[in-house]
Amino acid sequence: MFADNPDISFTLTDDYYKLIDILQKNASEEKNIWIFCDVDSLPRERFRALHLMKEFYRYEHKKLIMLLSEHNMPLFFALYSLLPNAHWLLKTEDVENIQPFLKQLLSTGHNISCFSHSLVDYARHKLRNGQVNYTLSGNEWWLMEEILKGKSLSQISCEVNVDVRRLSYIKRHLMKRLNIRNNIALFDAFKGIFP
Image (cartoon, rainbow, N blue to C red; front, top):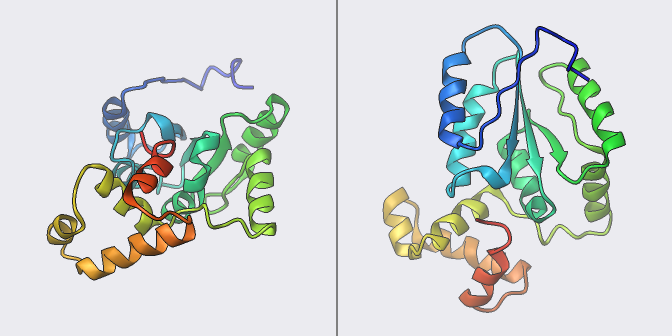
């Protein structure tokens, strides 16, 4: 679509910190920038990394396109609540649906999000069938990242000054929704979601 346009340049990096450095240098510039961010390539603390990314696409001439794999789908609703103005593309999207997605990106305003065809179908199917038990809230995602680092609830409570009973409630509620009875099963359930 863009190969013939001399005003368009591309930068590709799998180094997250190099990307942040590039974004910081270009943050205040008026040129249009599209950031394609693969959730799988983010550093281990993805929740914090995405908060940092959020700072760079708040400008009207910048667009953040999140690339999701099938195993990221339980995170979609949490990601969407964290990045409401981002755009969403499944990495397994059919080729014939990618060009319309990019054209929609070109024509949409700053406050309108674009979603790839397969992602819309996936979300519609899950919501229609009441299968939202396997989605994560932002709080659940953050807490699971902290737990998977080997921290106890009391340690997390001290670090962020949140009542340990509140953290315990979030964890218990998540385990109940997922029909998980112990910590080992909980860790196994999140192996495919977190790196």
